[in-house]
Image 1: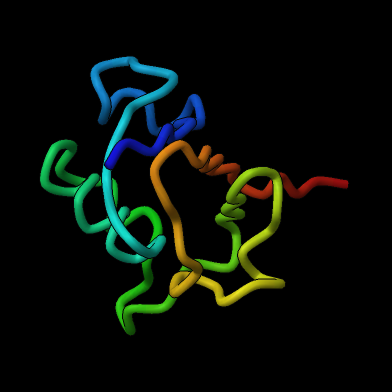
Image 2: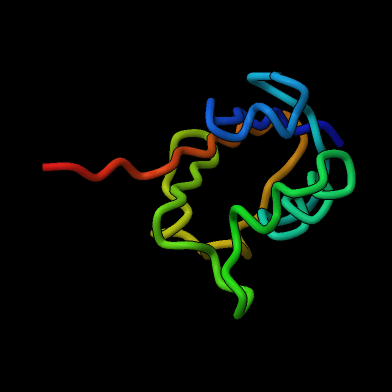
Length: 91
């Protein structure tokens, strides 16, 4: 199974400066676990110490926000595109 994952600029140093990587998994959580195997250090950027997705990380599957689906239990399949976008705050 191959899922395209778009990596935000602040995390590209962990992926060897790759903007996009391919990975597998049946849910977002499994996908992130598999990304961690290939790119150590990514998972801790997505999850807090309680194992919950961090509030400031937005994840989209085929342009749909997983917060309105099943969060990190959202299913993914071959050919899907996942975008990881850090929230930007300012004022």
